[in-house]
Length: 369
Image (cartoon, rainbow, N blue to C red; front, top):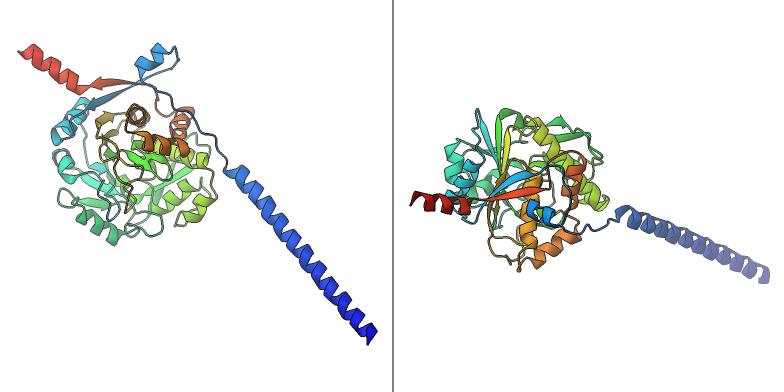
């Protein structure tokens, strides 16, 4: 009896030791995985610096080239038209108007009444691609078209969901993370692209400007997943890939995708950019219930260089006394890295010169008198 009891005790002891060893191995794996994840996901926050030519010269900072950014404080169809005309372009052929239709329930997307005259003056077709995140009402073409209708875009122009029939691959020249970009197949149907952007914050990218509009915005749902995961994943939704992707890799991939679209459009000859800075919060138009708008409206800006345009918009946010929440969002997500990486891969200029169209108009009026 005693011998049997000892055997049972030894058996229980072995089980306990086996359990403890297994538990130790489990926690060791968890610890190693945690250390890897923390190191893998780490990124440094880049400090904001102003890149307008006037400031660069005053601070003695060097720059190779600069781009012109036109600006008006007049957020109206007339102000939008003035910015467009200042670009001095004459689109030919079939014109695409790239914008975000906004997630269902989001009130901050571009107002169709604001853009109607410009869109119709160039006989433009509003273009978008389906989303790739969980819970979106725009992940499928039919629902996406319904949202576009609900938000008033189908009333002012035809709307084309460019990846409704799939995607095409375009090359990424000089990319570090991407070698190709998967964009909506129907992009090939257009000869010229006018990019209309509502500048605002973004919960993942820090801010959403012209670069995001042509990278994430023109990518198919599969292409969006690739950008969010640095080219590793391609099957939506983006959730898992985003959890495993370093923030800088994500923003670098956006920069590379944006460059590929510009290159595809005649190396920037067949694409221009206009950004509207109004109804800004820390959240994107892709959020159905965004944070409250907590900044004053600033104006409309336009350029042939999306990097300079986004930099100018960011600088205006950092010059705003009521821009603290958006400034914090940009910094915490290291949103400035997309601009840094664009210059590193030879795409656009962060240095820019603002041409104030309101002052030009006032001067012309004074000379006329």
